[in-house]
Length: 284
Image (cartoon, rainbow, N blue to C red; front, side, top):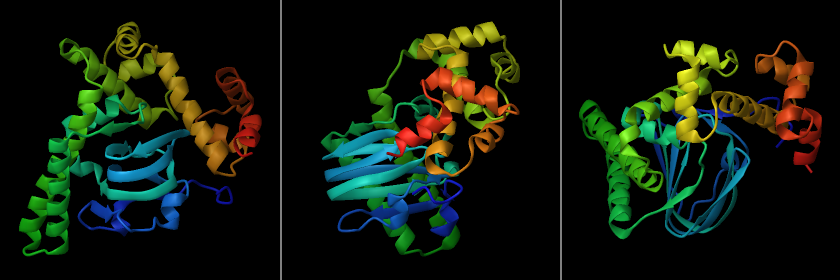
């Protein structure tokens, strides 16, 4: 797992020209790629109908038991740990096929990797939509016409998955504006954490004051801006320390720190371990 320099990053172009890939997990043996740590540039939705399986997503083990759903977000490092007679579907969707309102729901729960259970009606809707998508992909009639139908069905499928998570993590509807700001901050953070480290600079990008953004984010998440900025940096540092052979100096530069010693002190402060100690302990 640790012999490669970089964490592999995969995109859907290898598997599909339409931005969607469906794998029936029933009776299928997972590929070597699935069992090795990697990132995907797209969303992955897992609909498990029965059996048990487990995944590692950004250092958190997610156990799937019986009929559940799980989502893996673009950029998260993940791999399959185990699979015992699991039946269901794995669906990979290009971000362009995931509507904005759906991405909003998923991005608000980005740090809450977990699984969600389905009731009978919801499970039937999801399975029927998946099977119809499979049929359209495997038996094309008119390229342009079929693509539009596939796009609409993919949108609907993403919405069905989002609905289960939205119900589980539903928040106060009266705080729409503050939730939108929190979502915008987290999206910006995921994109810019290597180059922007200051809460003030994030607030400036969103055209609001740092004090107000900090107040909003803390209200919605329980933690201030500085916490989330540091967590995003440390999470990526852990990924690089565990899954690559980059030196600490190279990782520091990769994360936007010109002073590797400062980066090491920050890592120690936030994790209780030096970068090298984390690498050694996590690989035992």
